[in-house]
Image (cartoon, rainbow, N blue to C red; front, top):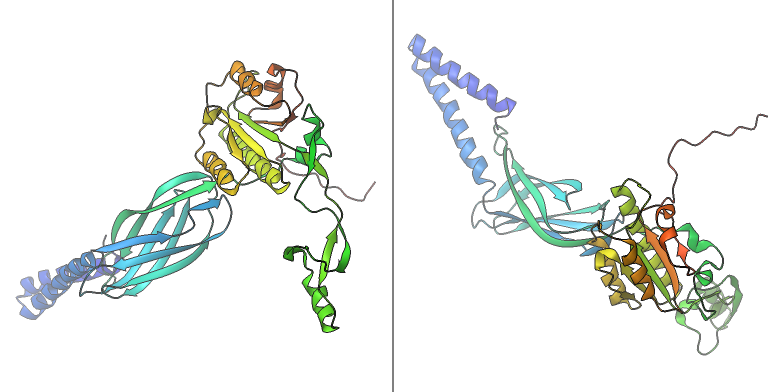
Amino acid sequence: MLTPRGAVLIGSSLALVVLGFVRIDGVLVALGTAGLLLLAAAVILNRRNLTRLALSLRAPSRVYAGAMFDLRITLDNRRGLVDAFGIRVDLKLSGWVDLACHAPWTAAGASSTARIRTSIPARGAVTRHHFALASSTPLGLFHVRASGEAPHQILIFPRPLIPVELFTTGALHDASLLSGASPGHAPGEPRGIRPWQPGDPAKRIHWPASARSLNRRRGLRIRENDPPGFFPQHCSVIFHSFGTSGELIRGDRFERALSLTCGTLRRLRELGTPAGFIADFNDWQSLPSVSRASFANVLASLARAERRAGTEAHDLRAALDLVPRDHSLVLLSDMPPDSWTHALPPRPALVIDVRQHRYGARKLHTGAA
Protein backbone atom coordinates (compact mmCIF):
# COMPACT_ATOMS: atom_id res chain seq x y z
CA MET A 1 0.00 0.00 0.00
CA LEU A 2 1.32 3.42 -0.97
CA THR A 3 1.95 5.80 1.94
CA PRO A 4 1.45 9.60 1.69
CA ARG A 5 5.22 10.02 1.48
CA GLY A 6 5.36 7.54 -1.38
CA ALA A 7 2.45 9.26 -3.14
CA VAL A 8 4.29 12.58 -3.00
CA LEU A 9 7.46 10.99 -4.38
CA ILE A 10 5.72 9.19 -7.26
CA GLY A 11 3.73 12.30 -8.16
CA SER A 12 6.85 14.47 -8.16
CA SER A 13 8.82 11.93 -10.20
CA LEU A 14 6.11 11.66 -12.86
CA ALA A 15 5.80 15.44 -13.02
CA LEU A 16 9.56 15.83 -13.53
CA VAL A 17 9.58 13.21 -16.29
CA VAL A 18 6.68 14.87 -18.13
CA LEU A 19 8.13 18.35 -17.68
CA GLY A 20 11.53 17.14 -18.88
CA PHE A 21 10.06 15.72 -22.08
CA VAL A 22 8.04 18.88 -22.67
CA ARG A 23 11.02 21.19 -22.16
CA ILE A 24 13.49 18.68 -23.62
CA ASP A 25 15.50 18.86 -20.41
CA GLY A 26 17.57 15.75 -19.71
CA VAL A 27 18.27 16.73 -16.11
CA LEU A 28 14.58 16.81 -15.21
CA VAL A 29 14.00 13.48 -16.96
CA ALA A 30 16.95 11.97 -15.08
CA LEU A 31 15.67 13.23 -11.74
CA GLY A 32 12.18 11.90 -12.39
CA THR A 33 13.54 8.54 -13.54
CA ALA A 34 15.72 8.31 -10.43
CA GLY A 35 12.65 8.89 -8.26
CA LEU A 36 10.75 6.11 -10.03
CA LEU A 37 13.72 3.75 -9.70
CA LEU A 38 13.88 4.59 -5.98
CA LEU A 39 10.21 3.66 -5.67
CA ALA A 40 10.77 0.34 -7.46
CA ALA A 41 13.75 -0.45 -5.23
CA ALA A 42 11.70 0.40 -2.12
CA VAL A 43 8.96 -2.00 -3.21
CA ILE A 44 11.44 -4.85 -3.73
CA LEU A 45 13.31 -4.25 -0.47
CA ASN A 46 10.10 -3.82 1.53
CA ARG A 47 8.66 -7.09 0.28
CA ARG A 48 11.94 -8.85 0.91
CA ASN A 49 11.98 -7.47 4.45
CA LEU A 50 9.02 -9.76 5.30
CA THR A 51 10.27 -12.95 3.68
CA ARG A 52 11.39 -15.96 5.75
CA LEU A 53 10.14 -14.57 9.02
CA ALA A 54 8.41 -16.85 11.55
CA LEU A 55 6.41 -16.03 14.64
CA SER A 56 6.20 -18.24 17.74
CA LEU A 57 4.36 -17.85 21.04
CA ARG A 58 5.29 -18.92 24.54
CA ALA A 59 2.53 -18.85 27.13
CA PRO A 60 0.86 -21.13 29.70
CA SER A 61 -1.07 -23.93 28.07
CA ARG A 62 -3.90 -23.65 30.63
CA VAL A 63 -5.24 -20.41 32.09
CA TYR A 64 -8.44 -19.11 33.64
CA ALA A 65 -10.50 -16.57 31.72
CA GLY A 66 -9.68 -13.08 32.91
CA ALA A 67 -6.50 -14.15 34.74
CA MET A 68 -3.31 -12.29 33.83
CA PHE A 69 -0.36 -14.24 32.43
CA ASP A 70 2.93 -13.58 30.65
CA LEU A 71 3.02 -13.97 26.88
CA ARG A 72 6.28 -14.01 24.92
CA ILE A 73 6.12 -13.21 21.20
CA THR A 74 9.26 -14.26 19.31
CA LEU A 75 10.04 -13.14 15.76
CA ASP A 76 12.61 -15.43 14.08
CA ASN A 77 14.63 -14.16 11.12
CA ARG A 78 15.50 -17.28 9.14
CA ARG A 79 17.45 -15.45 6.46
CA GLY A 80 21.15 -16.14 6.30
CA LEU A 81 22.48 -12.69 5.33
CA VAL A 82 19.85 -9.94 5.34
CA ASP A 83 18.62 -8.41 8.60
CA ALA A 84 15.00 -7.43 9.22
CA PHE A 85 14.16 -3.84 10.12
CA GLY A 86 11.06 -2.11 11.48
CA ILE A 87 8.71 -5.10 11.74
CA ARG A 88 5.37 -4.51 13.44
CA VAL A 89 3.52 -7.57 14.79
CA ASP A 90 -0.27 -7.55 15.20
CA LEU A 91 -1.54 -10.65 17.02
CA LYS A 92 -5.13 -11.82 17.50
CA LEU A 93 -4.69 -13.99 20.60
CA SER A 94 -7.30 -16.73 20.90
CA GLY A 95 -9.56 -14.76 18.54
CA TRP A 96 -10.37 -12.26 21.34
CA VAL A 97 -7.40 -10.10 22.30
CA ASP A 98 -5.63 -7.69 19.92
CA LEU A 99 -1.94 -7.31 20.77
CA ALA A 100 0.80 -5.36 19.01
CA CYS A 101 4.56 -5.10 19.37
CA HIS A 102 7.46 -3.71 17.34
CA ALA A 103 10.83 -5.21 16.42
CA PRO A 104 13.14 -2.38 15.26
CA TRP A 105 15.97 -4.68 14.22
CA THR A 106 16.30 -8.46 13.99
CA ALA A 107 19.66 -9.74 12.83
CA ALA A 108 19.94 -12.50 10.24
CA GLY A 109 19.68 -15.90 11.88
CA ALA A 110 18.59 -14.33 15.18
CA SER A 111 15.30 -13.51 16.87
CA SER A 112 13.54 -10.71 18.72
CA THR A 113 11.28 -11.34 21.71
CA ALA A 114 8.58 -9.15 23.28
CA ARG A 115 7.03 -9.84 26.68
CA ILE A 116 3.40 -8.78 27.17
CA ARG A 117 1.22 -9.10 30.26
CA THR A 118 -2.29 -9.95 29.11
CA SER A 119 -5.42 -12.00 29.75
CA ILE A 120 -8.13 -13.71 27.69
CA PRO A 121 -11.70 -12.69 28.58
CA ALA A 122 -13.58 -15.80 27.42
CA ARG A 123 -13.11 -19.55 27.77
CA GLY A 124 -12.23 -21.82 24.86
CA ALA A 125 -9.72 -24.22 23.38
CA VAL A 126 -7.48 -22.64 20.73
CA THR A 127 -4.58 -24.20 18.86
CA ARG A 128 -3.68 -21.46 16.31
CA HIS A 129 -3.58 -17.67 16.59
CA HIS A 130 -3.81 -15.29 13.62
CA PHE A 131 -1.10 -12.65 13.21
CA ALA A 132 0.00 -10.04 10.68
CA LEU A 133 3.48 -8.63 10.00
CA ALA A 134 3.80 -5.08 8.66
CA SER A 135 6.79 -3.20 7.31
CA SER A 136 7.44 0.27 5.84
CA THR A 137 11.20 -0.13 5.40
CA PRO A 138 12.97 1.59 3.72
CA LEU A 139 12.06 5.29 3.81
CA GLY A 140 8.38 4.63 4.62
CA LEU A 141 7.27 4.83 0.99
CA PHE A 142 5.20 1.64 0.93
CA HIS A 143 3.34 -0.28 3.63
CA VAL A 144 3.47 -4.05 3.12
CA ARG A 145 1.68 -6.71 5.20
CA ALA A 146 1.97 -10.48 5.47
CA SER A 147 -0.30 -12.70 7.56
CA GLY A 148 -0.17 -16.19 9.04
CA GLU A 149 -1.09 -18.34 12.03
CA ALA A 150 1.12 -19.09 15.02
CA PRO A 151 0.61 -22.56 16.55
CA HIS A 152 0.16 -22.67 20.33
CA GLN A 153 -2.48 -24.64 22.22
CA ILE A 154 -4.22 -22.79 25.05
CA LEU A 155 -7.08 -24.09 27.16
CA ILE A 156 -8.98 -21.19 28.71
CA PHE A 157 -11.02 -22.35 31.67
CA PRO A 158 -14.20 -20.48 32.66
CA ARG A 159 -13.83 -17.63 35.10
CA PRO A 160 -14.52 -19.22 38.52
CA LEU A 161 -17.53 -17.69 40.29
CA ILE A 162 -18.51 -19.10 43.68
CA PRO A 163 -22.33 -19.27 44.00
CA VAL A 164 -23.84 -17.42 46.93
CA GLU A 165 -25.77 -20.58 47.85
CA LEU A 166 -22.54 -22.27 48.97
CA PHE A 167 -22.05 -19.68 51.70
CA THR A 168 -25.33 -20.60 53.37
CA THR A 169 -24.62 -22.46 56.59
CA GLY A 170 -25.50 -26.15 56.28
CA ALA A 171 -26.50 -25.90 52.63
CA LEU A 172 -24.38 -28.86 51.56
CA HIS A 173 -25.70 -30.97 54.47
CA ASP A 174 -29.28 -30.21 53.52
CA ALA A 175 -28.50 -31.51 50.03
CA SER A 176 -27.73 -35.00 51.40
CA LEU A 177 -30.04 -37.77 52.59
CA LEU A 178 -27.52 -39.03 55.14
CA SER A 179 -25.82 -37.37 58.08
CA GLY A 180 -22.26 -38.49 57.28
CA ALA A 181 -19.76 -35.66 57.46
CA SER A 182 -16.03 -35.12 57.62
CA PRO A 183 -13.87 -32.12 58.51
CA GLY A 184 -12.65 -30.13 55.57
CA HIS A 185 -9.08 -29.10 54.87
CA ALA A 186 -9.80 -25.41 55.10
CA PRO A 187 -8.59 -23.80 58.38
CA GLY A 188 -11.04 -22.42 60.88
CA GLU A 189 -10.99 -19.03 62.56
CA PRO A 190 -7.57 -17.85 63.88
CA ARG A 191 -7.20 -18.47 67.62
CA GLY A 192 -3.68 -17.27 68.42
CA ILE A 193 0.03 -18.10 68.35
CA ARG A 194 1.69 -20.90 70.34
CA PRO A 195 5.17 -22.48 70.56
CA TRP A 196 6.15 -25.04 67.95
CA GLN A 197 5.53 -28.70 68.73
CA PRO A 198 6.79 -31.82 66.94
CA GLY A 199 4.48 -32.72 64.08
CA ASP A 200 3.36 -29.15 63.26
CA PRO A 201 3.42 -28.51 59.47
CA ALA A 202 5.84 -25.89 58.19
CA LYS A 203 3.07 -23.97 56.41
CA ARG A 204 1.56 -23.01 59.78
CA ILE A 205 4.73 -21.28 61.03
CA HIS A 206 4.10 -17.61 61.83
CA TRP A 207 7.33 -16.15 60.51
CA PRO A 208 7.14 -12.60 61.96
CA ALA A 209 6.45 -13.96 65.45
CA SER A 210 9.10 -16.65 64.97
CA ALA A 211 11.68 -14.04 64.02
CA ARG A 212 10.99 -12.09 67.19
CA SER A 213 11.08 -15.30 69.23
CA LEU A 214 14.37 -16.47 67.73
CA ASN A 215 15.82 -13.04 68.41
CA ARG A 216 15.07 -13.69 72.09
CA ARG A 217 16.68 -17.16 71.78
CA ARG A 218 13.40 -19.00 71.86
CA GLY A 219 11.78 -21.44 69.44
CA LEU A 220 9.47 -21.11 66.45
CA ARG A 221 5.90 -19.91 66.79
CA ILE A 222 2.90 -21.62 65.19
CA ARG A 223 -0.34 -20.06 63.98
CA GLU A 224 -3.19 -21.91 65.70
CA ASN A 225 -6.72 -22.00 64.31
CA ASP A 226 -10.03 -23.21 65.62
CA PRO A 227 -11.21 -26.56 64.21
CA PRO A 228 -12.87 -26.17 60.81
CA GLY A 229 -16.51 -26.79 60.17
CA PHE A 230 -17.81 -30.13 59.00
CA PHE A 231 -18.66 -30.83 55.38
CA PRO A 232 -20.20 -33.72 53.46
CA GLN A 233 -18.07 -36.77 52.78
CA HIS A 234 -19.00 -36.78 49.08
CA CYS A 235 -20.68 -34.40 46.66
CA SER A 236 -22.00 -34.75 43.09
CA VAL A 237 -22.31 -31.68 40.87
CA ILE A 238 -24.74 -32.02 37.95
CA PHE A 239 -24.94 -29.53 35.06
CA HIS A 240 -27.75 -29.59 32.49
CA SER A 241 -29.55 -27.37 29.96
CA PHE A 242 -33.11 -28.64 30.43
CA GLY A 243 -36.01 -26.20 30.74
CA THR A 244 -39.75 -26.22 30.01
CA SER A 245 -41.14 -22.75 30.68
CA GLY A 246 -40.43 -21.24 27.25
CA GLU A 247 -37.43 -19.26 28.50
CA LEU A 248 -35.20 -17.82 25.80
CA ILE A 249 -31.88 -19.60 25.35
CA ARG A 250 -29.14 -17.12 26.13
CA GLY A 251 -25.48 -17.73 25.41
CA ASP A 252 -24.36 -15.42 28.20
CA ARG A 253 -26.25 -17.52 30.75
CA PHE A 254 -24.56 -20.67 29.50
CA GLU A 255 -21.16 -19.06 29.99
CA ARG A 256 -22.16 -17.79 33.44
CA ALA A 257 -23.45 -21.23 34.41
CA LEU A 258 -20.10 -22.74 33.43
CA SER A 259 -18.33 -20.12 35.55
CA LEU A 260 -20.58 -20.98 38.51
CA THR A 261 -19.82 -24.66 37.95
CA CYS A 262 -16.10 -23.96 37.91
CA GLY A 263 -16.38 -21.90 41.11
CA THR A 264 -18.43 -24.63 42.80
CA LEU A 265 -15.89 -27.35 42.01
CA ARG A 266 -13.01 -25.16 43.16
CA ARG A 267 -14.83 -24.34 46.39
CA LEU A 268 -15.48 -28.02 47.12
CA ARG A 269 -11.83 -28.77 46.43
CA GLU A 270 -10.75 -26.04 48.87
CA LEU A 271 -13.04 -27.54 51.51
CA GLY A 272 -11.49 -30.96 50.98
CA THR A 273 -14.78 -32.52 49.84
CA PRO A 274 -14.39 -35.22 47.14
CA ALA A 275 -16.66 -34.31 44.25
CA GLY A 276 -17.82 -35.79 40.98
CA PHE A 277 -18.96 -33.80 37.95
CA ILE A 278 -21.79 -34.92 35.64
CA ALA A 279 -22.96 -32.87 32.65
CA ASP A 280 -25.19 -33.37 29.66
CA PHE A 281 -22.51 -32.00 27.30
CA ASN A 282 -20.26 -34.85 28.55
CA ASP A 283 -22.96 -37.45 27.75
CA TRP A 284 -23.75 -37.76 31.48
CA GLN A 285 -20.40 -39.38 32.22
CA SER A 286 -19.20 -38.88 35.79
CA LEU A 287 -15.80 -37.17 36.02
CA PRO A 288 -14.04 -37.32 39.39
CA SER A 289 -12.62 -34.12 40.85
CA VAL A 290 -10.41 -35.40 43.64
CA SER A 291 -6.78 -35.29 42.55
CA ARG A 292 -5.09 -32.44 40.75
CA ALA A 293 -5.00 -34.37 37.47
CA SER A 294 -8.69 -35.28 37.62
CA PHE A 295 -9.63 -31.69 38.48
CA ALA A 296 -7.61 -30.52 35.46
CA ASN A 297 -9.58 -32.93 33.26
CA VAL A 298 -12.85 -31.46 34.56
CA LEU A 299 -11.63 -27.93 33.82
CA ALA A 300 -10.63 -29.02 30.31
CA SER A 301 -14.14 -30.35 29.71
CA LEU A 302 -15.57 -27.00 30.84
CA ALA A 303 -13.23 -25.16 28.47
CA ARG A 304 -14.40 -27.24 25.49
CA ALA A 305 -18.07 -27.40 26.50
CA GLU A 306 -20.80 -26.75 23.93
CA ARG A 307 -24.42 -26.34 24.94
CA ARG A 308 -26.53 -29.47 24.60
CA ALA A 309 -29.77 -28.58 22.85
CA GLY A 310 -31.66 -31.86 23.21
CA THR A 311 -31.64 -32.45 26.97
CA GLU A 312 -34.95 -33.88 28.20
CA ALA A 313 -36.45 -34.41 31.65
CA HIS A 314 -35.97 -38.17 31.56
CA ASP A 315 -32.25 -37.69 30.84
CA LEU A 316 -31.91 -35.56 33.96
CA ARG A 317 -33.87 -38.03 36.09
CA ALA A 318 -31.72 -40.91 34.86
CA ALA A 319 -28.57 -39.00 35.81
CA LEU A 320 -29.98 -38.29 39.27
CA ASP A 321 -30.76 -41.96 39.79
CA LEU A 322 -27.11 -42.86 39.21
CA VAL A 323 -25.89 -40.56 42.00
CA PRO A 324 -25.21 -42.53 45.23
CA ARG A 325 -27.66 -41.84 48.04
CA ASP A 326 -24.91 -40.77 50.44
CA HIS A 327 -23.71 -37.96 48.14
CA SER A 328 -24.76 -34.36 48.58
CA LEU A 329 -26.29 -33.12 45.34
CA VAL A 330 -25.60 -29.75 43.68
CA LEU A 331 -27.60 -28.85 40.55
CA LEU A 332 -26.67 -26.15 38.05
CA SER A 333 -28.20 -25.08 34.77
CA ASP A 334 -28.14 -22.21 32.29
CA MET A 335 -31.94 -22.08 32.61
CA PRO A 336 -33.72 -20.48 35.59
CA PRO A 337 -34.63 -22.99 38.33
CA ASP A 338 -38.36 -22.28 37.93
CA SER A 339 -38.27 -23.91 34.49
CA TRP A 340 -36.86 -27.29 35.57
CA THR A 341 -37.06 -27.92 39.33
CA HIS A 342 -40.66 -29.16 39.05
CA ALA A 343 -39.44 -32.10 36.92
CA LEU A 344 -37.02 -33.37 39.57
CA PRO A 345 -37.72 -36.40 41.76
CA PRO A 346 -38.27 -35.72 45.49
CA ARG A 347 -34.66 -35.71 46.66
CA PRO A 348 -32.75 -33.08 48.68
CA ALA A 349 -30.51 -30.97 46.46
CA LEU A 350 -28.77 -27.61 46.50
CA VAL A 351 -30.05 -25.70 43.46
CA ILE A 352 -27.79 -22.96 42.09
CA ASP A 353 -29.63 -20.09 40.41
CA VAL A 354 -27.84 -18.82 37.31
CA ARG A 355 -29.33 -15.36 37.93
CA GLN A 356 -26.67 -14.46 40.50
CA HIS A 357 -26.22 -10.83 39.46
CA ARG A 358 -28.67 -8.06 38.81
CA TYR A 359 -27.80 -5.49 36.20
CA GLY A 360 -28.96 -1.91 36.05
CA ALA A 361 -28.30 1.45 37.64
CA ARG A 362 -28.22 1.47 41.41
CA LYS A 363 -30.41 3.86 43.30
CA LEU A 364 -28.72 6.74 45.03
CA HIS A 365 -29.56 6.87 48.71
CA THR A 366 -29.19 10.17 50.49
CA GLY A 367 -29.45 11.12 54.11
CA ALA A 368 -32.38 13.46 53.50
CA ALA A 369 -35.69 12.34 54.93
